[in-house]
Image (cartoon, helix red, strand yellow):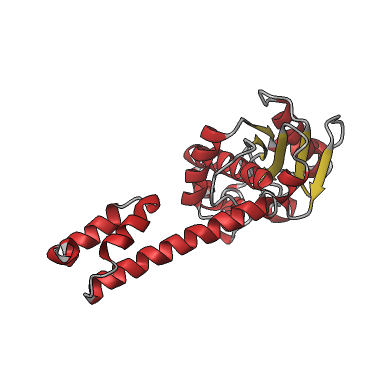
Length: 256
């Protein structure tokens, strides 16, 4: 048969170039080829399809709250990145996904690799009904405290959306001074696809900002630790003193 006439290296290359949605046809084409190397490729394709189906099921479970509140037309997920670092802004993301959202692999941004976050950021920005970020500077954090600065960043993110949401799904918090109905969800970035998307938007935006700051103040290593209190960062802080983007209220114990 045709499959047996092909060399295994050719079939391996074909498998590598086959989009995942075409794997069933690849499997049908070679499942009767008895060669061990070909059977290994076929099993690998089956495993990939199994993982894809599992991911689709996980994603459907992530839509639990979106389905529960489906009577609201525009449901917006809200999350933040950067409450804990010693430097840089706190950034909030706000994302309204389409009702028939088919984006896979969305999760709490901390559970994803940097490369996967970047990849998903582009997909979210392409497919979202609306998406925006808000942020509060280190100076603002020092002035009003991190919680209030986080709320301020979240309000800004919502205000910058092109569409006014009918409902907010928030990661754990209830945002004051906002009239839109809200549902706080503990660990919401791992339970709601909308909040998970917002967490990715916020995290990628903040990481990019910190990478830019690294060009201005390379001695602190912002590109690697993103402003968090790593040993490298604390050592640099003690050696060079604070940069303008350090949070004064956060670094008191590290400087004289």
